[in-house]
Length: 304
Image (cartoon, rainbow, N blue to C red; front, top):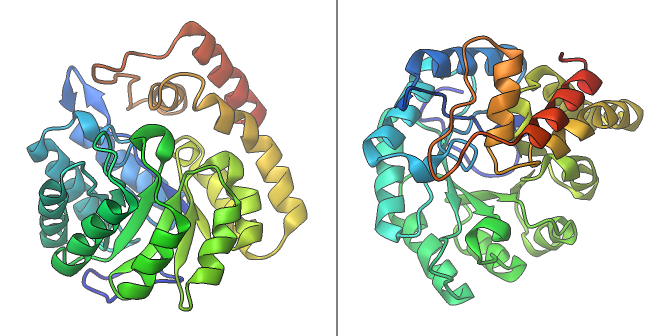
């Protein structure tokens, strides 16, 4: 998609959308490895890319590093697929800074996680996203992941934000684990609104409920299989979708056999020769048990 194309909710973002890891080597961002990862993802059928999300270890990046990763992703993507830049923060003004910088680089949208640690009320969440919608100048994909943020973006709040800002708040990545919310959002919003699963293991039932894709951890490691799975879902080929889901499911599970993104980085180090399993403190490389789980899942998926 050409930079600057207007996004109005609904169907712009769909299919398999990897939440990209940020490769490190000797403590520094490995820019060459990241560029290769971007190319591989696009060539394998990914429909958009998310730099600087949870899987990208955004919480351990300096602001300069955060912006550099987004800049590289936009440059390397070169308009082939949309870039949804991770812009969330527990500080509204920091999130706004990330959004403005991402827009300057040419990102197509912002993924904005619910503010963590602060535990804002629903009124506070509404005010946070409203401010960003009014000042951020990028379409927003809400990101709800209560297990990490210790706050929950309630369906009523999501629906009211979408109704109030239909041109600015265009979708949600839902990692609440509550599949009923797909239907609640769909019934509570009267215009196209892009619902993306935030959990690979729930992507199949989420699609049945009305989701149109998944912002995926597993797609880092198995981009072609994840793209094929999403395509089967979109085409209503349930038999093929189930077959691919069964093949991928152990890998979905293994990705969270230890603190993420430790397992996915280990898996990548097994699948490609240019990414190591290096993570940043307070994360450490995944345990031997997690490595065994990943190894077995790679074999099941036909990737090792």
